[in-house]
Length: 64
Image (tube, rainbow, N blue to C red):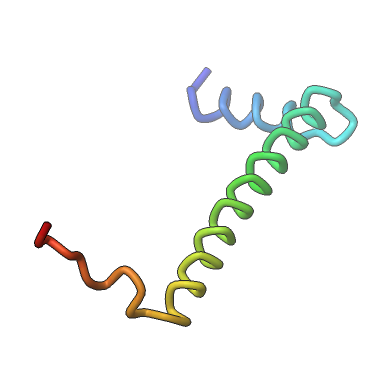
């Protein structure tokens, strides 16, 4: 049996909606995607906050 056919057989078994393992995997993947989206949106919000006042933090006082 070829590896590609074995891989497709395994993926079809996991992706089957009536399979509880497939459902659990789908939930875990969705959770990771939501976590990644939240992280990216937080970064975007921070970038937008910095763009409102771009001069803040632009100068460093090296004379002390």
